[in-house]
Length: 334
Image 1 (cartoon, helix red, strand yellow):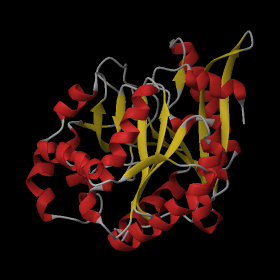
Image 2 (spheres, rainbow, N blue to C red):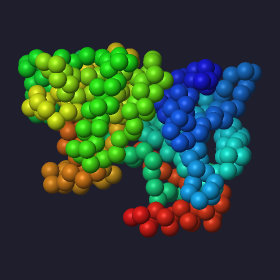
Image 3 (spheres, one colour):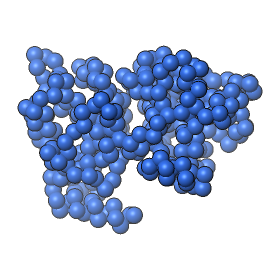
C-alpha cells in the first residue's frame, strides 16, 4: 500500500474510501487491478487518482474506472489538463478501451467538473448506485434523533428495551457476518460477495472501517460493515438473520454505527444506495415495490436524511468499436 498516496487522499475535503490504496488491493484480489496516477511537486502529491481496471469479455481489452476522484489540491487549468493526460496514458497502457468516471456526490459548495470539455459523455451504466440517503450526523443524540421519523426512533429503542446486545466485532466475528450475508442474499434475492471478500475488507481497513453486530441470547441477529473517511461514513454492507426480526436489530445497529462515525469526526452518514428515482416517485411507490433497491428504501427513508444524487457515471471513449459493442451488450441484457 502507498502511504504517501493514502495520506494525500486523507487530506482531501472529498476524501473517499474507494480511493484508498487498500480499496485497490481489495478489488485486485477479486477480478480487478489498480494503480495510482500522481502529479508531484517537491516530493508532495498535488493531484492524482486511483484507477481500477476490469477485463472486458472476449479479450477485447479493459474498462478503466475512476470512482470518487480525481483530486487536485490547487485546481488550475494546466494541472487539470496534465492530470487527465496522465490518466489517459495510463489507461491506454493497461489496454483500456474506455474510461468510466463516477465523480460521486458534489455538495453545493463543491465545484463540479465540466464533463464535455474533458471529453466525457453520460454513461449507460453505473458501477455505484447513483442515488442515496445522506444523513447529517452533526449535533447531539437528541438532535439527530429528532430528524428521524417516529417509527425509526421507536424501532431503535426496541432492541435496547428487549436486551439486544450491540457490539463492535473483531476478526473472529467476520464469519458470523458472512453467514448472515448469505441468509440476506437468499431472502432478498440479491448477489453477495464470497466470504473471503468481507474477510479481506476487514483486514485491509483496520483504521477506516468497523464491523457492528447484534445478538440476543446467543442468536446472531444483524451485522453491518461501515467505512469512514474524512467527513463521510458509508454503510456499504449489511446483513440480518431470519429470526427475532421483531427485535428490530437492524435499527439499533445503525444507531451504533452512526455514533461511531460521529466520534471519528464524520458529519455525514451515507446509507449508500436507493432506487435512482426522484423523491416524489420514491415516496409514491416504495410501499408497493420490493425489487432491486426498492426493498431497502423503506428502511433508509426513515433516518431523517436527504435524498441526494451523485453526478452519475460518465464515459470517455478510446476505442469506438469496442465501446459500441459494450453498449449493445448492455441493451441486450436489458
